[in-house]
Image (cartoon, rainbow over all chains, first blue to last red; front, side, top):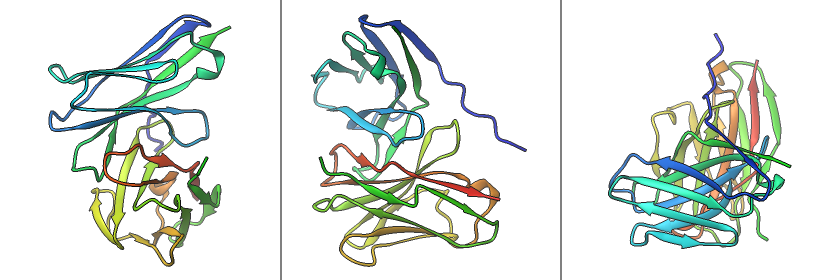
Length: 112
Length: 113
């Protein structure tokens, strides 16, 4: 039979508000983390990355926070826009750089 | 901005047939990958490739799968005898080195009927 799709948690925000998307990663040995944005029918698009020797990194309108103690990663999007609507995945690099393990994803919906 | 290019964008094939999915990684990248995403599910790692050989592969990447870099620009994924459960989006990715942001292609949607 058909496999059941992954039920994605959904974050719904008003345009202009800040968004925070959270991710729990699995491997304490992971040393590199990436946030990806995926729009319908497209490939994952790199947003921002962070290495394990940092706990915060900022980009344009985005900030990633890493808490290694509790194995938690977050993505903050400032002044969220309708174009930010997508599924967001965190990914961890857990084998000397040769493979990424993706999280389950969060759907961000931005209301105009 | 440099892109990873994948062809075809959509492939329909009969169960048991062989398919070859094609990718052109970014030209100065050294590490190449295939991932897949079954509809509505997570992106899953299949295989990584460096220096003309497989460096890591997942349990999904069984004997039905193979990869090849036949020339200086292409990177292919072959599925020898497709099964219904191989239906998925297949993404190629490349990086210039370890622990750099992977660049993904836009994917090939494989439908096995």
